[in-house]
Amino acid sequence: MPFHIIRHDITKVEADAVVNTANPKPVIGSGTDSAVYEAAGKEKLLAEREKIGEIKPGQSSYTSAFDFPAKYVIHCVGTFWEDGAHGEWDILRSCCRTALALAVQLKCKSIAFPLMATGAYGYPKAEALDAAFREIGRFRLKIKKTR
Image (tube, rainbow, N blue to C red; front, side):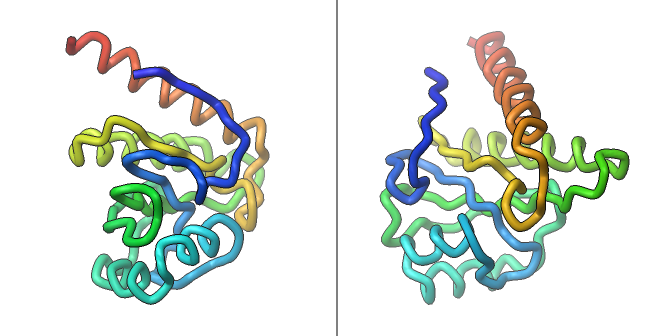
């Protein structure tokens, strides 16, 4: 599976699954979360998200993508950045792991990730990118070994 980094509006990326920077509770937030809901159809996506209920930081769940150009939206909850000494790194890496695991479970051939928790949650972009690189790299090695 090729790995590409692109700077693009995630609502325009064609992938089997798109990861949403979700809120723990089923509400529409700002930034990427709001854009994903708008692209998918707010009422339909929110109704499905409400069926899931609360999602803990570092965990992921999924819904249909509805009007979005994807099959699934994987809702993943990041963490607020405090100072890096409160488990933020582990939670963000767990976001990537759980989202990738769901993509495998759903038999997705492609997945698009935003830079998790770097907006309203204030996570430093360089650290968030490093966490994503490490987890995606581990995932790719694991997949390669199973083939």
